[in-house]
Image 1 (cartoon, helix red, strand yellow):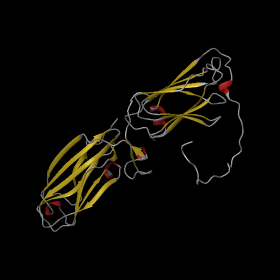
Image 2 (image 1 turned 30 degrees about the vertical axis):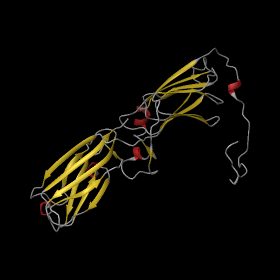
Image 3 (image 1 turned 45 degrees about the horizontal axis):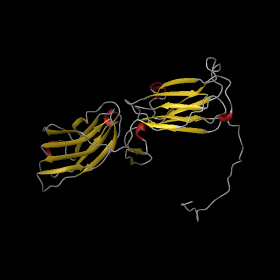
Image 4 (image 1 turned 90 degrees about the horizontal axis):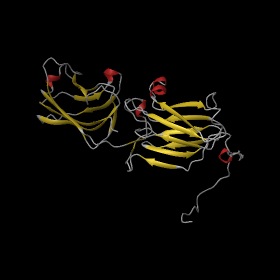
Length: 302
């Protein structure tokens, strides 16, 4: 053994060890049979109110199936064309089969009955998959057939992400390229009140799914002694505040107020994201005359 476990503390097992009969060794009373099941995850996703993690439970011991299938020995899962991991759980033994996105797999099933639970974790609006599953009383050698035969680098994130709604509270994500760009030049009218929205529908929102914000640059032209704060938020459409910046150099006529780059901030694309400015005077025009905005983002990356 090449790996050494010396020095690692060990403790007695606190649970009782009990043996269970293994149905893999049992011979089926029926000829080789396959029971196919198709799960469109739009149904449970909508019934659950759009939460990202949903499951389905069913018992194959139905009037139609019980005359064809008495034991489950193997399971085939077609999860191709899907960005969502699928989990098949057998409550009788506690066995859980995990199926990676963009794969099709055969697995042996260690179960005492025909009760099955299937879970999809991390569903996203606009990318809800359909899963094909086949249960059989034949023991099939396990194998996995990846649809995308390459590694995808994933970036770690916090267990609870501050911005967006609960469909973005995942602790990993694939970094985005930043392939959508746009720039705005907004003249400031004398009548614009403080707290006004300089530009709304940033990133072409609202739309379905999510976006990755990878770069933002906001500059302004004009000198002032006003205290200026910038806010990027989706509060008007029931969302949250992304950032608030307080910045103004009184010695500069043209200056960069916000510059964030080399980032991947995941945002709820169903909200209307806006850029607004607040000053300590009644109108924005006392602070500056023109605002320049440059954005780089990715829409619903697959």
